[in-house]
Length: 409
Image (tube, rainbow, N blue to C red; front, side):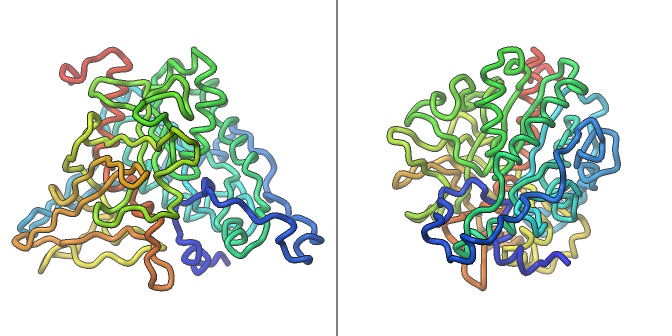
């Protein structure tokens, strides 16, 4: 049986095949590990993406991306209203989504069978985009939480990162061949998924002019995207700049998230790159040009899931929340900041003693009762800006089609 304890031990974070900590060398490994035959990376052969079973989400199916997205809106006085999820009648662009590190498979790379963990994260991160776009999300043989746990225990990394990338690349090529039909595409990924998309853009998309033109936006959340300090392009990407203005498309939306009052500590893996003269890009979907802005956060009603503390009551004396998601208008603000060499999205909870609603939110990674400050709010990178991300994707796709946003009906 897959162990939830394993998920807790690994912080259950849609986490980090992108970690900057190198795996132990064979010289430092115990003799038994040096002599032991490596386990098979994955129990599954290379997927065939022409088969629908190789996809976690495809349009028109009753799958993870068709999960109910109704939201309970909680007003400052504590009163509630349910906002029904209504997809647009005319959807005119596509979203290609790659999920983060969630697999509990016991092999170093996951199999090609969707478990509850893959379905749950797609429902939380990708399904809301289906209001505006057709969502394509491939299953892929990702680096598992099991493999990351082994590294944390001082063992060599047995997972094959190239395998995970090759799967997503094959899925992308299949999507372009069978499904795209000249439509604009928004790329969406979080953590390991964002890191794979970053590699795909650099290796396959930017060098191909025709493919690059199809990209309305690349939303690479919870990963470090390097740019020359003070610039918008020239680090990880040579052609796609950071998004910095309304009306801009064919650009990159990216950030890593920390509380404004708990900035990244010196050893954090997020918000800094080792290359001299380069910084981590940060774009705030709620304020592309910069500055602090209230976000359209859409949070999990029960909290941030495994690896985080449970969420308490959303309002004093409030009714139980019956939807999976909650909006708390005006409660959360965010701003891209630079601090002690780190660049990140600083999140503020606008606590108000006169407000019946909660004065805090969960989302910090907690293990054994201890908060891991170097991870920041990685668990809720997307939820703190979810409504803004969906709106921005719709806007950028409209601009890509040549439809000015203000005239769009």
